[in-house]
Image (cartoon, rainbow, N blue to C red; front, side):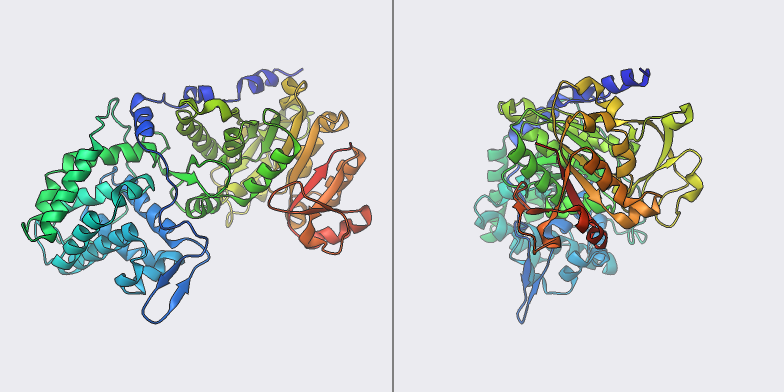
Length: 554
């Protein structure tokens, strides 16, 4: 037995010891999470959002308010978790960079009133942009009287508006603190060049202010403005700024990942995967396919299917293997439901985010409701066939451009085949390679009830390293990616993966939508129905791409 197995045995980082892999969780974050809960996405709880203008209704297939919220959070992180008016002006000027937020510049501000806190952000950003262009104000807030009156009416009129905005992840208290910060009138204040993100660890102890008193103080300022008792609404809010910033620090730690998520990342919430409770995880703040989908939609559809399969096939406690775990969305959801999950992910930057997410979830798992948690661990290795030569025990992983989940494993002597237009070929990372049989050798007494394999065309190579597990029927349901064109590009024969399963006695299921005339359907997952595909039907699979399921013999 190779000594590599000793490393594999020590690799899993389970939720109760996740802090060993990154900085230790401090009491400030625990206190913050005890104080603030996640009440779900605000103004973005529908798949189709609409903005009503005077003459028309504009519908979207994604959630523009979520895009706006995360755009603001990313700017907040870049600024060291403190906003200024220049940053708000920048937010307004960059709304047209993504189509979901482009609409905010194309309709009147009044048409965005359906989301009060989002409307507040847009009012501030628009006023800041106007100030940046005209330099009309000097050392004062750029908010004109109409905006101040609207803010005051919202603060004093909407019941629990501040509380909902806070626990929905909107940095509303930082926005209010911004009202007490004077503008800079220097000639070079706008446009803003990229200053790079600032990541500062939170203090060891964060004072938790009396929220009720703070809210009363804010509403008192708003009431004075509405009743015209005072014309110094911004100054009144400014007097509460230290407490506002304390609350913002707590929110930034507990809901936005400050101090836990690594640099160039923020916390997103998987909050649209009913009946699973909301789960936070660290995602890339820049553009990335999986990160953006989770940020803007609150789910990753593949995880819904895995959850349905795991729930239908077994009781919590069985071992689920997640090969190609990426950010760990599916791993964390299944662990949250009580399953033990062993994840494999070779890309170092993604592993760093995964470990931070374990740490982000660890306090939640120790607060009274931890009975439902399983264990989640990660192995930082690439999977492949049994290595016959020492040089085969190592390879290179190369990150996809704009899609870290599209990373590809290259043998040491094949890096020249990397495509620089789609991958960061000049930044390869050396990783160890191990077979599934080796990696799971210490789990042979445990039934693997479900395994997901998503490896960008390398699925066959990975399953060839699981010959013992397949022959001994140690693997239950196998949910694997089917992209025949990509597999052929990787030098693999797609039909061989179907033959490999057939030789082990497994049956192949495909989504019912691919073979709608089939008589026998399987309702294993919640999100999809499946049909058995006979060997004669295999050639028809080549016109599709998606996921297939291999069902073990009874």
